[in-house]
Length: 382
Ligand code: HSE
Image (cartoon, rainbow, N blue to C red; front, top):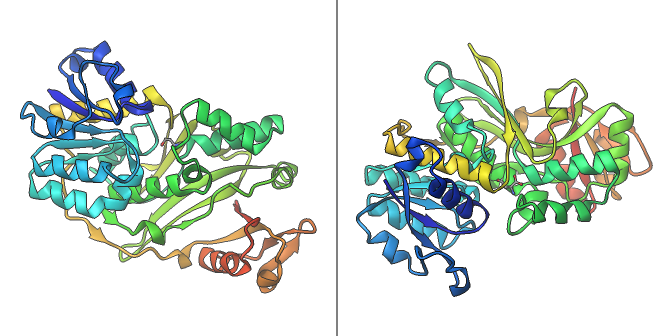
């Protein structure tokens, strides 16, 4: 099975390494025939090309593995590959979550499929698990620590009292962070992963802009101190629940109780938990970022295609996101408390308070109205 690899960065290089190494008989059936790179300086292998058409027009290449990142030209290349009847495997959650409907429709029209295990949870076989659980059960909800960079930052800040900016730099050096790290620290990376998990778990498509999203850019030592003093651990959590006609989906820092298994997920690891009727809660833990773990997931998808284990393609219906059903208690630190007066339950410091039980929609609306770029919000586990 011959593969055209798009991108030779952190993930692309890992895919090439795993396939070239051929550790198992399945991997030895695969061959990276061409590698698309952006610049002359990246032409480090005789298979490298600067011309996507060489991959597109090569009839021997049946699978295009898109590991470029970014929206364009990744989206156009993936679309063209599908139109040519090539399977697409992608690790690019931003691109796929943004163009999901377009790419799935193009795949169906051309009798091929799009595979995206690596786009969500790095090396964790989360999508494969969802396919398997759904053979027996409807998935009711999921929650996860979906971002290695922020988990790494939060863990190191908690353990060593280190500075946010230094930890971000380390996560970048380790190859965990996105090209634009604001995708990590503002929660967008998790938002894309939540959207793709909604697709796989519920067969629903959602507009990524409707997913309520808060990140950890504004977290400060004082917030973590409050957390520790009250026996909580702060983690950035993505969730989704299926309500039939609509879904609830959000990304928000959460103050988790010490006995929550999510509280002890270290460094670049991710954990994702599904909830379904007969299986109950099932959790999946592994390295959510990094070259070889993510490349492992890409190669798994390639082997799925080669072994003809395509997930069934169902018609996917667009559903609205409605977070009125998401009720909780929120910790908010802001210099502008006036917007929150009716929502406050008690103050925990001069600038921070805990709300009454309110909906996420109310909390998000008040946070937007406060118009305070230093505001930090987290949901407190009950
Ligand atoms: N930037 C992402 C993370 C990479 O830190 O989890 C894996 O998707």
